[in-house]
Amino acid sequence: MISERLKPLMANNSAVRQMFEEGNKLRAKYGRENVFDFSVGNPDAPTPPEIGQAIKDIVDETPAIELHGYMSNAGYEDVRETVAQHINKLQGTDFGKNNIIMTVGAASALNIALKTILNPGEEVVIFSPYFLEYNWYVMNYDGVVVPCETDENFMPDLERFEAAITEKTRAVLINSPHNPTGVIYSEEVIRGIASVMDRKQKEYGRAIFLIADEPYRELAYDGIEVPYVTKYYDNTFVVYSYSKSLSLPGERIGYLVIPSEMEDSELVFDTATAVNRIMGCVNAPAIQQKLIGRCIDSQVNVDYYDRNRKTLYGGLTDLGFECIMPQGAFYLMVKSPVEDAAEFCEAAKKYNILMVNGKSFMAPGYVRLAYCVSYETIVNSMEAFKKLAAEYGL
Image (cartoon, rainbow, N blue to C red):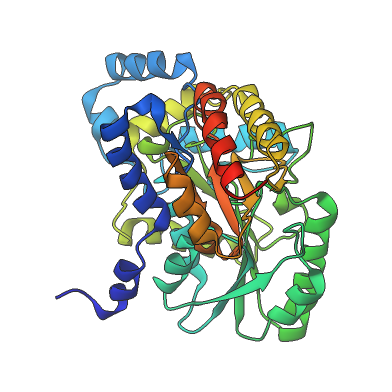
C-alpha cells in the first residue's frame, strides 16, 4: 500500500511526536496545568510584539499581486539583501543577495543543500547524538549517514572524526547550539573540524561540504559565542530558521547561505535555487519573507529560556538527578537512573511528566527535556520530579 522505503519510518515513527500526542491525551484527562510536557521543542517564549503589527502593516500596505504572487525561487531580492547585510553586521562577513536563498524553514534548507550536492551512495558524517530526522533527509537523496561518536561531554572527537571520513564522504552535518544536548562548539572545535576536512579534501581531491544547521544560534547563554562557520571553512552551507529566534515554528521561514568562497559557488547557488522549485516548495512564503525584511533585528527574550534552564537544572540536580548543563538551545539531557531509559520515561508518566528517550537521538542512557515551556510548568513540575526521584532512591 505504501512505499517499502517508508515502512521503517512508520514503524518507528518519531518518539517526540508520539509523546506530543500522548501529552494531548493527558491534558484532556488531567488539565493542562497538571501535565508537565517536556517532549517537544515548541517555543513558549512570546513572539516579539512588533511581529504581529508588522504582519498587519504588510497586509494593509502591499498590493495583492505582490503580497501573494510568485517571486524568484530564491526569494525576494530585497529580503535576501536585508538578510545578507544583517549577517554581515553581526558576523563581519561579506554576503550579498546572491548568497542567500529564502527557504521553508531549516528543514527545507537542509533538504535543498543535500539534494544539491549528494550522489547516490555518498556519505554524510554526523556527530552523535543528533536529531534523527537527519537520517531521513539524507536518505531522501540516496545518501548514507555515518554517525560519529562524541566524547563524554558530547563534543566532537577529532580522531574518530578523521577516521569516519572516507573517499565516499560528501558532507559533514553539524548542529550548534545543539539538539538534543545543548552544547555549543567552540572556535577551537570548529577550527579542528575544518582542519580535518581540509586535509581530507586534499587527500581525496574532491570537495567535502560542511553543513551547519543553526536554528538555535541566538539561544546561547553565559556570554558564550557561537562561531560563524563560513569564516573557517570555504565549502560551508549555513542553514537557519526563525522558528526559535522569533517563536515562529509554524510559519516555516528560514534561509540557506551559500558563500562566494565555496567551490563553484555560482553553480551551486543556481542549482540550489532550482532544487527549491523542483522539491515542491517553489519558494518560501511571501508574507513571511516580507516579515523578516521588516523585523530583521527582532528576537525573543533569551532571558526567558535562561531562567527556565537554570531553574530546571538546579531543581533536578538538587533532587539527585545527574544532568548536563546546556550552553545553548533549550534542551536538557538527564542521565537515566536505570540502564533502560525507556523504563525511566514510562515511570515519569505516572506523575504526568513527559520526556523523550535519548535513544531517539542516539544517546542511550539519557532522556531529553525541552525546557521551552512556561516558567510555571517548570516550577510546578518539581513536586512530580521529587516523587519520581524518590521512586528511584535518589
